[in-house]
Image (cartoon, rainbow, N blue to C red):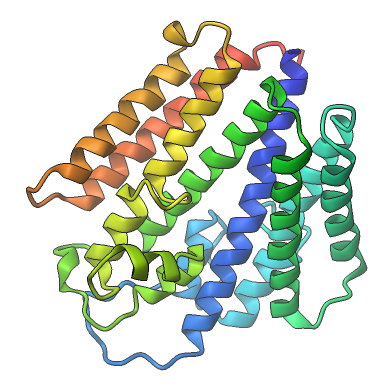
Length: 303
């Protein structure tokens, strides 16, 4: 496959997944923001609007962000590259370039989302977020049903899963309280679960209340949950291994294998762990992975 095509598919996956996860996060935090906190537990996992901007790498707003300002900045602000609108615009442009590689159903899903966003015909910010979640789900469903399982699909899937890992990792690093994570008891970790759409999955998998420690370990280690960091990294590893002509010597595949193995070991380790240290370690590995992927697969993409 041409490096340019692989590059466009990879970033189509990343941009669309970034828009989807941003919409999920904003919807989840909005729901939590409308609920009155039970108490002022200092160990609570909270996702303030300033924290949401920090997760997305957006500049802090003077005097602190409120819901309306943060929602506008991260949904329809064309001047903010971290907004959902900007992500969809980039994804649609990438899809346009590779229209002969993706299916007609995939193109229709992403193009219709783009046109709906540009029209501005939504019932407020929550209607906007719901539409983004629905259209991105339609795109990924069409991908599973209509796209050939070849190198193109592998690069698209790798971009999607690495973006999911990065987004959840950033949420955890911003939201997880410093100190003993098991101290949270007021249920504010629900905001974190709602931000990734994992509340029902957590309830089924974990026989513990949704406090900081259990929620963080679930989103970090639980391989049965597809958007956990561990599951996303394993899926990205499998996708790149399928796309690589010699995965045994591929640095991106080897790096992902090491990270996946380390997370699996830590998941089974019964000793108390500093989750902030684990998050920082995985974050550094993902930063190095970006360089590895660009060097091995996309070296000629922009020349």
